[in-house]
Image 1 (cartoon, rainbow, N blue to C red):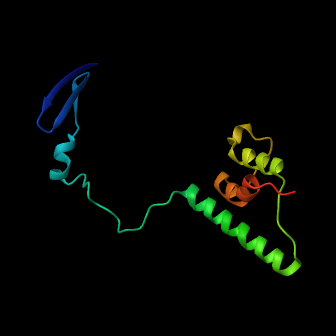
Image 2 (spheres, rainbow, N blue to C red; image 1 turned 90 degrees about the horizontal axis):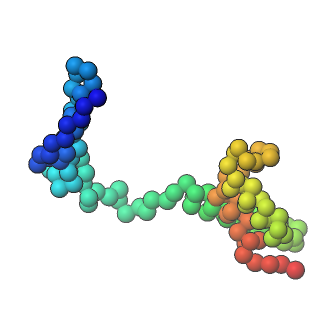
Image 3 (cartoon, rainbow, N blue to C red; image 1 turned 135 degrees about the vertical axis):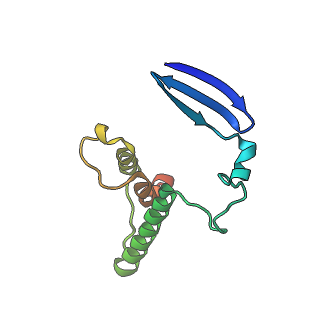
Length: 125
C-alpha cells in the first residue's frame, strides 16, 4: 500500500493506493469550514443550557429523595436516612462496571448519587 501526501488551500489531501485503485480523502482546514457551511462557531440552540444525562439523573434522584423525605415526615413523622457506610457502598456498587459487579444493581450512578447525596454529605447520630 502506497501513501501520497499533498497539501492544498482546502486542507490536507491523502491519497492511498491499494493495488490498481486510488482513494483520495480530503480534510477541510478550520479557516474554510465556515465558508463551506460545515461548521458555524456562533450556532447556538437558543439559550437553553445543555445538561448531561448524569446531571439530570442526579437532579431526579435528589428530587425523589426530597419528595420521599417530605412525605414520610409529613405523614408518619419519620426522617429518611441511610448510614454513611451503606450509602458509600451503594454508590460504589452503582459506579462499578457491569463485569465487576457481583449482582445486578438496577440504578445508574447519577440517580444513586442524587438519592444518597445528603447521607454522604451529612452525618446523623
